[in-house]
Image (tube, rainbow, N blue to C red):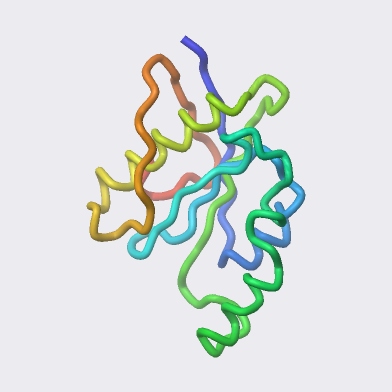
Amino acid sequence: MPTVEIEWKKYNNFFDLWRAHRQDTKLLYVIGEQHHCYVGSIGSRDGAQGLGTRYQWQYVNRARSIYGAEESAGQVSYAGIFKNPEQVNGQLILAAEALTQNGCVTKLGPQAVLFDPEDLIEGVDVIHSGEVPDFLQ
């Protein structure tokens, strides 16, 4: 059974996460912790263009005008960084994303999430460490 190790880092908002990880091509990310949560990944579908391409700054920046604020208030974000990225392929990223999404839906309920959960992939174990989102603890 393959094991994927993920080190989580907490950010005050998605803007900070985006700035820190926009070049990353293998990443799990969580936006929100209790409501309006989104769990996604970069690299699970052979996309190697990074978070900065998936969320172009012009669109992230437009959120400032939509919400009338410089940064998002109270909506934390998390970056899930793969400890051995060279050993992680798209299928393992997708498996880790599905397990993370499942933890979010199970703990918070479907009303709290803004994603369609990926199907769980059997036979992959995920170890979480660092500043782990509450719903994974």
